[in-house]
Image (cartoon, rainbow, N blue to C red; front, side, top):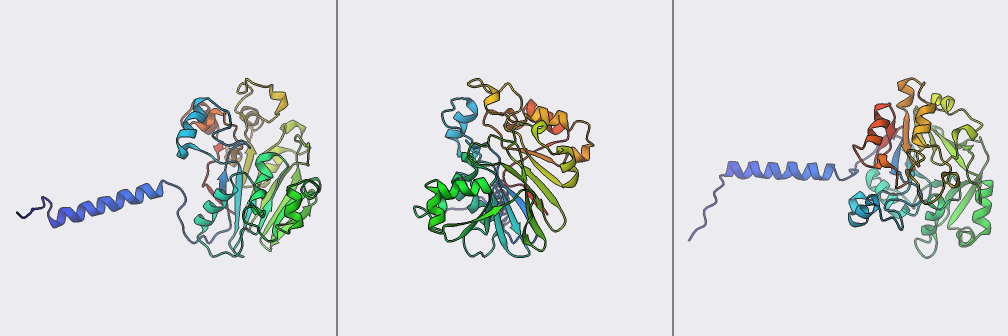
Length: 325
């Protein structure tokens, strides 16, 4: 017996259209879409504090859910910088999530590249900011001459401590030692300038970066002890840039219950908001908070903490955000 379809050709065509539309919506919501990028821009690759999300040993709901659901996981803070005029890519920080982050970056750019990456800028020697260099070693990619931009103490730390010294000895990485306030010219339209910041400098100094593009500038300070300990004016620096990616490890001083805040000093989001409260809203809108501890309540979309930040005119950085330079 012949099977008769209840759908007319018109209905079938309509269903196919709905299926394509649904597929498009699902794909467009899943992350960056490949495409030729013609602008020099910054791409957010991670937003978390060194331990990431989920955080080791954490039994709270923020981590328990993320352990079960990969879509809730968030990588350690990192920025990608694409030089469109010279088809070059740079990373800020070498995190434990580096392989996935570099893959995201490359998929987003959808360009033809030689080699892994054209350079990595390190801020300091805390685990979330440099340990991704291990993937350039012989146990993984066995890279050749990846440029790593670092300050004097950071460079010395990598040269004199294993296993990092092996990366130098095998020419997996090529250290480019920087000086404070000395601009690193990457092209005639792109430069990066390190700025010393006060932090827990057990093994290296700590820097933030001023990133200058063809028409815009960005400030990147993922780690600092307190703004008042800095010999620079945060307000003045924000005046000079178009985007400011700032340390927001904690929302307030009430998040840690296993150790005193004095052991991990950071400016809380509330402190930074208070410091910048008198600034015009246009200035506050330049600020993108990142480097969130897994306990930070702003990580929950729609939370009172997140809404308070947004209502005050500030922003919360998210993975896959793009910022043209």
